[in-house]
Amino acid sequence: QERIQVDISETTRPGTPVYQIPEAEDQDSERNAVQNYVLQSTDGTSNIDKFGLRVTDQPDGSKDVRLELNEPLDREVDDLYSMKVIAIDGGSPPRSSSIIINIKVTDANDNNPRFVNATYQVHIMENQPVGTPILTVEARDPDLGPNGKVTYNFAPHTLTEFGSVFGINN
Image (cartoon, rainbow, N blue to C red; front, side, top):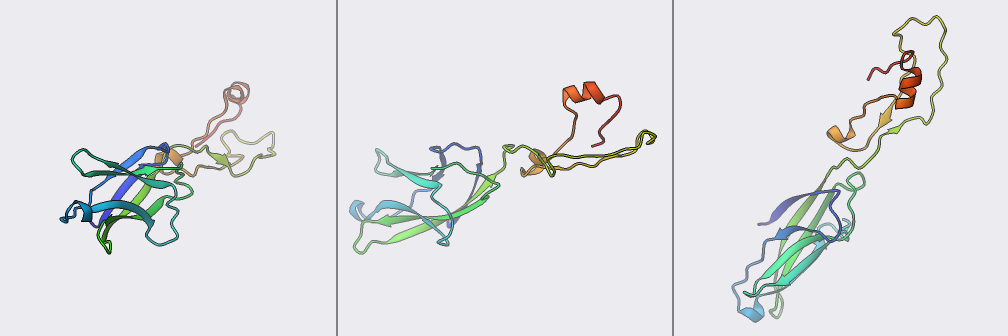
């Protein structure tokens, strides 16, 4: 394969092997066969330090190559990584082949909603008709989809104290 797409949750813990890389095939003899694997940025600017390779020699002489997470991910900071895994043989000069790995960081519900304003102040007339909107508030959550959906409710104490006078229309 020339390219692989991998989805990784932003809640994946560092030290976790996140994807098994297909082993490169080399028809040369053992000494000239694949000796090493290297992880490299595809564009020189991607922060691939969050990832590493775990290469384990197998009893049959093959190598188990896994992409491993080194540092925590945060989809709200970086949601895409692109890197190249290069297989290098033992020849002189050495020959190589590579595969591109595109990593999409998937969202988790890891952020709290935050109100646009820390406080709101409103003045209402005592003869305001029942059901008249008196204030619009807004909170935002940087998570995606259902994880970022915000609903509004009164805190239990506020509901007990003022729920018969005020209501919320989401």
